[in-house]
Image (cartoon, rainbow, N blue to C red):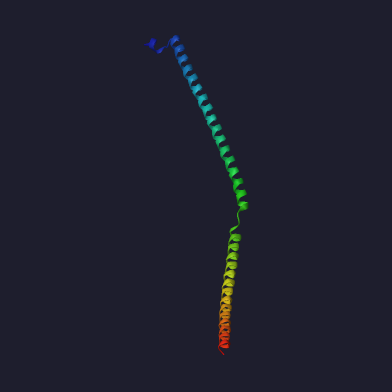
Length: 124
C-alpha cells in the first residue's frame, strides 16, 4: 500500500510531459483566439470606417442637393403670387370678353340701323 502511494519517477515524468503538452495546446489555442479576435476587431473597424465614409459622402450629397431646393415658405409664396397673377389674368380676360360683347352688340345695332336707313332711302 505504501508502494501505491508513491508515484515513480517515470510516472511523474510522464504526467509532467502530458501536463506540459496540455498547457502548450491551451496556450496555442489561447493565442489563436486572441489572433482571431484581433482580426475580427480589425475587420469590424474597417467596416465602420467604410460606413462612416459612405455616410459622410451622403451628407455632402444631401447638402449639395439642399442648396438647389427652395424653402417651403418661398415655394408657398411663389405659388400664391402665381395664383394671384392667374386670377388677375382671368379677370382681365372676362373684362375684355365683356367689352367685345358690348362692342359687337353696338356694331350690330349700327349696321342694322345703317341697313334700315339705306333700305328706307332706296324705297323713297
